Length: 260
Ligand code: DGL
Image (cartoon, protein in one colour):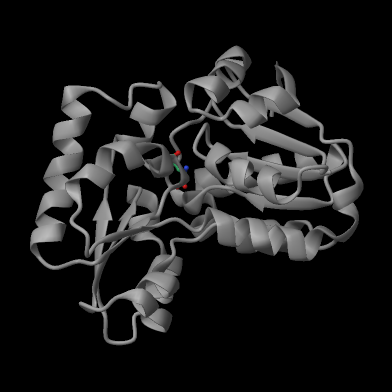
């Protein structure tokens, strides 16, 4: 079974890509909704949550774990790998490398949570892969919470999104990296603000390909999707159709509450 987790609903964008790539695999999705958002929390807190969830998923029989959260990956993936040496762990990191490679204007932007913006891992990714390309790191506090509460189409959020995106486009940025899995669900708000030179970069499909490479036997599962949440499990189940994830809704039963 493949375990996938996030602070809340954002990782469902990654789960959907994995479910498309592995239609028979058994999947367990855990939303840490009692502690969402992670993006404004200190490093030690995020690491504690990641280790507790990793242990829980391994105890549930997951033999591959996907950290479907840029904040958790950039902050704590090494600690998780050290803690679970027998379980392969796939992370989700902002797509600085593909964006820098694809950029013709040599100016890209990375939309992230405050914690990811501050992480050493993001600084390292930029140092390794920017290769002369100018990288604007843009923290977007509050955006994940709008997605989490399924209020991703309010006038206030539209204005906040425009206030971040329009200056980037005006400055000649031609690749905008969705560096938080929640932001995939804001694409309908962001896309109309772009011109034809600008592309949105989402690594979900690349993460799914990596999961396929590592998963080996998982292709022979029973297409089960177990949903668990540390709070409000019924909201997790209800979010699937609300976020346009019908295929996941059909694959899953009710969501269960877990205490970690
Ligand atoms: N979805 C998460 C990410 O990819 C974090 C959102 C949050 O909890 O702040 O960074």
